[in-house]
Length: 403
Image (cartoon, rainbow, N blue to C red; front, side, top):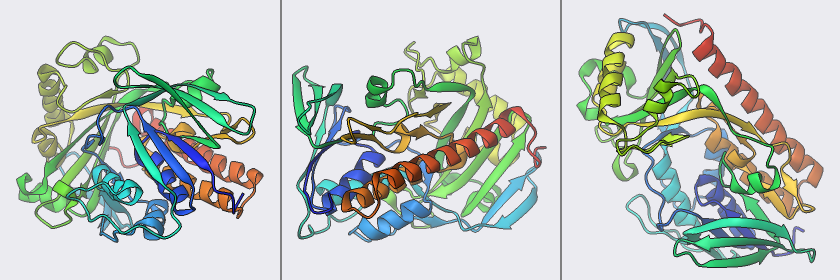
């Protein structure tokens, strides 16, 4: 398998699909990404992410732009309700933003131009690639002739099909491919959500700026956890004074409760099961949450919540696949399609990078099928278990630094 060049279809064009596409392109394989989003570029999700060791290792190896992308956090620290630091320790955590990583990957995958980075020159021996947006996969089947076929519908309503030697499902925790192959594996709501938002670091007061800039800061109380850290600013700038403070606030809402239904119903009356996008929140719900912030959070956290203009919400869920390889290895899951982690782990992007590199090792012949399966599933199960333990302790138990 290490010398044979194959045709690959990757379902899902977000970070996981792009990590995979780049790794396989560099091996000389022909890669086609199918992304259901109807526009050529995925929207900036306005979210910070942790650049874990696997993300850093992947970009060091594959990112030919060599553009700096991460911010170093000096300390991990906890506040009490009055805003005093009650615990602090040095940390090696690095942070970045979803949009910066996305555009770095697009530049390396298909030469997408942006203000985030230069497009690198191609590498001899690379495979050809495409990014087919507006393609929603509707079926997958084994053709019995060493190929796999995916059927799809375009944004214009045109049906089509395409065959490949290998299909990679990188289509997230609600994976369409996984649902087709393993319909009994369900994504389950855990009883709480993450409110998320950012503010420019320049609009923060001196107290808030000094608390959050280049630190990872937490506040815990009964049923609540909030954290914040610095991320790149517009067009991925790392320049001080132009960056963003990113916050994540976990709050409990029982499933099917009136409070959850109201929370996830947008300003136009549409209910969202998993994500309430930025700009869609009911003004009444947002004003209510800001009042709640003033009463429950330390002053610095209440401030950055109140100064946020475009918050969004993600329902926290659990899902782990029972199988990751199908049709004698001709269809495989990676990243969030394998296991959708709770955000407490800060490992979703790292899992995508790890899985992409493990797939590359498999196709190069560096590891065999058994080891590939063992390492991918061990990563997924270990981190998933850690996330469940952290989330349940934070939201339904007693954190040792909760006040």
